Length: 441
Ligand code: ATP
Image (cartoon, rainbow, N blue to C red; front, side, top):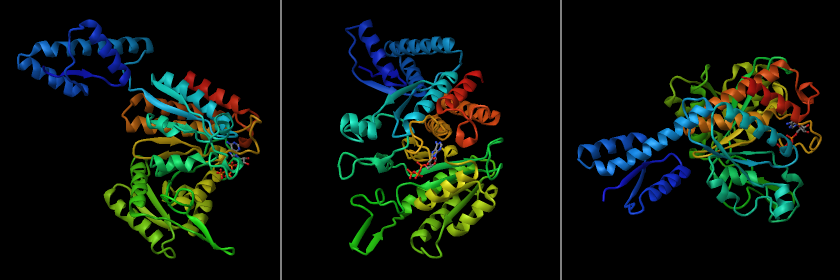
């Protein structure tokens, strides 16, 4: 029997088509089911007709028709012309202000998704202190299995400093997530907004930080800990730089710069002193520059960068650097435009991405309802944009654009801002204002 070909864009549809088939004709034997995209299906059908095997092509036509009708009806009710693949997104609230800013982020993302006719299947996953208290583990068993089935997730800030000490079940989850999913690029924008008090009103840069190597001892080794104390008075911290890691983050920076108007990459390192480590990183950046002739490339030593970033940040477009240099410089960059509440971030890898604001869990302001949700909301925005481009889901790109516009409008209007931005609004009020603006667009 010839294979029966189905056009299925996601598993629920596969199952409904299978159900339909079986109900339609129980005597039909599914000899072989092949999942292909619509173009190949069309070619297959034509081939079947041309070969006189219309009886096998016919059922596929019925399914195609049902699939097409389903889309049309859905489109009609949603008022759009095109329905995209659904995105599977996890919600991991994290700790302290994470419990306040993540719900606002999801609220805004939901409105954006509805506006853009984007299907998102949400998956709340316990993590952090709450998970420890309720389930006995800051990263409960099965978390990675659940994340495996997702396209990406929103991770609230993690307050691991306050986790119970010397307990194998109270680990810091985010380095594990970064490594397990090879989230090698930490993308951190810093942008000025009109009306927001800041040192500069014309900064628009993105820092791309290598995420899994460098100095952080809890994530730079496959096994073991990258810092140790051979004698009571001596500590050795290992810094890891690899060609592959440097190349990957350099590529991410050049790809990003090539989509931006100014198209400039600045590599930051200190190869005059760290001749091998920084030297290797710089070499890989230079090699990558040759592959992107439309992007201009320059290099700045990290200490010089500290001064240049404070004195004339407008000259930078995309900055690429190693882990710890990037961690420090990205906090400095967001301080230039209004503070940590304005610092979104995305950790991206080959398959998945994780929205994670640059700021920490800010226990000093947790529970007061005053945390600025901007950074987390815009991290969610970056996630939708990344997923939209990665999986070619135009509705996700549209949702991200709407989120950006709505957030920008609320910032410019200046009516509903949290205290760190000079306003009096609560976290929820600012989230509501952005969601309402989105609905209005
Ligand atoms: P980590 O080491 O985990 O990155 P951190 O030591 O950099 O954390 P944060 O938790 O980021 O510290 O907080 C630093 C300060 O910035 C806090 O005391 C808080 O006042 C402020 N802050 C951080 N995030 C926000 C926010 N979303 N809204 C308002 N203020 C914030």
